[in-house]
Amino acid sequence: MRVGAQVQIAAPIERVWEILADPERALSFMSGVTRWEVEGERSDGLGARYRVLFRVGAAEIGGLIEFVEWDPPCELAWTSVLGVDQRGRWRLRENGRGRTRVEMRLAYGVAGAGLSGWVAERLAAPTLRRHLQRSLMALKRLVEHEQLRRTAAARRAARAA
Image (cartoon, rainbow, N blue to C red):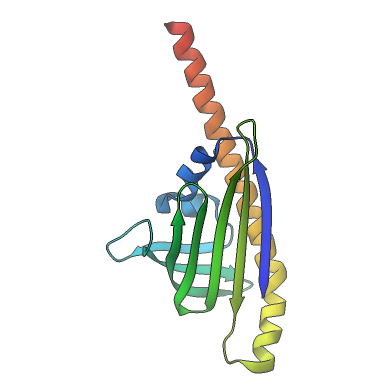
């Protein structure tokens, strides 16, 4: 099953990437994610691994993921190593005038579960789609708030000089 969502953020692509690629900040904007912990030596970049759990209804699902694409400041993608089969991708694109289009996609499945797996995937889709939309809106609020704070600080510094 595949779900996705996108949003426009009023900030340069580098500012969005700065927050998105920081594993310490993932839980501050990722809706439905109950665990996002670094596993191993690397905390970011290609090959970094994380223990990730998503809340879907009463269950927490997920497992171990690894970043398989890392192209700052445009692309970040992962695939599952252990646990629920999943592939995810963040895509950032400059949209002119200091704006960034952010897209998140998630593909997941219950391998080898037959009809019951197919039903579980379909039942989880609306919840996961809402989590993606909420995550993007929380990222937008966070990035735009920090962008406003930086702009205000620069104005204050310019007035003081």
